[in-house]
Image (tube, rainbow, N blue to C red):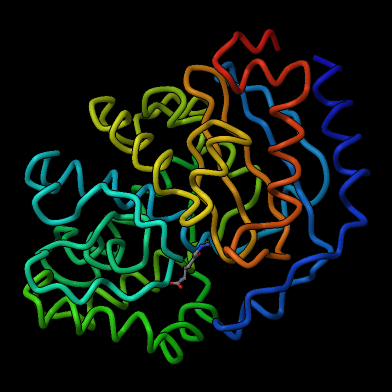
Length: 312
Ligand code: DON
């Protein structure tokens, strides 16, 4: 529908000039991003794309990976068993907050904050690190629809500077929340965060979740439909960290952000939406990304973010 494409182009031009926010720099490699990058992509369940800007620019997926790895852990363990290892309670804390120093709690709060994501990644099954990585890459490939690669520079950059994540893993080990070998879990976690995607890829991945786990472009199943509801619930309550409540209020659909500047959102049964722009606000969410989603939810098509038919 021309109307949607025109609206995305208007948003792109309206927000392109915004230079508020900062590049993430605690992972040194992320500070090399071009602050001007900006892409918006909507992929519908019948396979159409509405796109504007740098939608083919590759960047590392970062925390958005947590959604998909959680889905993998649900498949490996099942809902109840996984729930005993990783909770589903929003924290209201930043993504990198240290786990509560509470020995009674034998599980991290939720799989979207770093502590819970590292614990979830540590559960992924496979006989050795190579098999676990390959299983994970195959999982991402089913969502994206083609081969994916780990950006080695970003992986090394985070592996050599990720002391805070390493500290969390040690604390969780101390409390019996996770098991050895934690260095292997951390490596796999840093690798999942360094998987390269484009804005278009993220919209296809979101559309796959919107389509009950089947990639709408390739027709391939990426995750069991019985897990999609759980994945979307956790995205909705925990995906935007300590902005999750305000996101629900302002935008109102399940979403996940990453520190490289991506935001991916799911409109169940209708479409996947992704925005990429690396300048971040204090919560670690893309500044332009938030503006685009807020505008989409106000647009006359905004009804579609509230569950009405998109009519594309
Ligand atoms: O573990 C980290 O800190 C990064 N690899 C991912 C954090 C992230 O993307 C948080 N999102 N806003």
